[in-house]
Length: 114
Length: 518
Image (cartoon, rainbow over all chains, first blue to last red; front, side):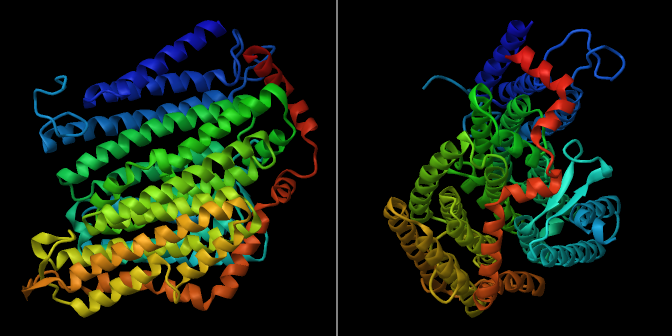
């Protein structure tokens, strides 16, 4: 399970960073979202990966650490609001700057290789 | 009441923000009055806290009475009290300045402003590292909206970069927190410091990795060398009172670095790595920012680069981590924050009297109130460059004295050259604005009374810091000594109980953590 989990987090992070470095706002936002998922999964794993272990004392013999779950919840809420904000901002930038390039300089032809 | 005073710097702006945001239909006038009243109250509260902390007393406040290290604690020591009062003083100047008309160019200026204050104060007070993240996010969210206040192409473009960069920074922050939590099993900074001190082997390496990630995030906020490229554009496109308040935002990064460095990673493996990184990038920041100051073709980016010079200086001083260097840093901090803030305000005043030329360094019509603005500009320029009568020179002398051995060889020339280039750039800007002008004046854009009050309020700090140099440097020395002794904090917050016992009581969680992840 650890290997699978690590692989998922790693692939999500790598894809997130790749997309984050793109020139258009849409891939950048998707990249931020993927990075957010990777971070949430990673945070979740910091308390240790256990099966059949509830985060409530008395529900199972060895309860798991409840704190990472609380942290993930906080991170999800904040990440969600940030994503919503960036989406609106990107739409605003598209209409104000006349281009959805992050630098707002290129025309509609966009990312043509130079 | 007395024991709850420490939570007021967070609660008061939060309440203020709620009132201001919910009373959206009230007149601008009443919004301004309310906002100024809340900021004045905040300033009074922070001064009371400053007085309390000055005696060396540490105050802890367990939120919801959940006992540390499990609950979140607020912690007031000399450093937090200093940052709180500095924020309140700066904010008061900004909010008065904004009341002249900048606040009605968009919606909800005052409500967002109070939210930003809440985030800043919370970050300065909290003793829990995840809570620090939450308050960082509150500050950032408010700053995103404030940065875009009034709209416009330039602001939206700069804002997009700023937001994306900071959201990515937040992701990194969370990863760092995850690593640190996984290694230490706690989020309370004092408790974390206690555990890090006794660690070795694999766990210590993990902590070092987490610590360096954390420093990268704080360097992004503080705008240190490889991570500062967002700052000049963002700060120069922000509305003047917001840019002035942002002068404290870079200091938030500095505060966080000082805090984790002194409380958590003191005497750990991570410390020397952090210091090396901060020292060289601090020096390189000074160098590049000095070049930026000379290259700027507009007063606003020029001031933004001056902010960067001060960031580089402060962080290089922080990396020396001797008591003398920290004393110098803490004496320099209020001066540079307030002066950089006021320069953004003065730039706005100059720009509004030059018609189309704005703050660009080109010949334009004569300024309408050239004596008043010239005087203000001169005072602020002397302050920011660090010429003798004002506090900047004292702070730089203290800092140069504090550097020892080979550190002197690097710090002295860079610091003096940066001062020289700031002097050249500011004299050139002043000559262009006040002497190289055409005949004829633009009558518009007279300095209004609130604007003048705001500027003078902030500018008055410069002579005051010299007049009261004695008590202030005593205070900063006491702060530096307090920072050098994290054991006192740990002992007062968590008692003498050895770490072992605490780990024992958390054994079910901790054992599994280690068993499964390693």
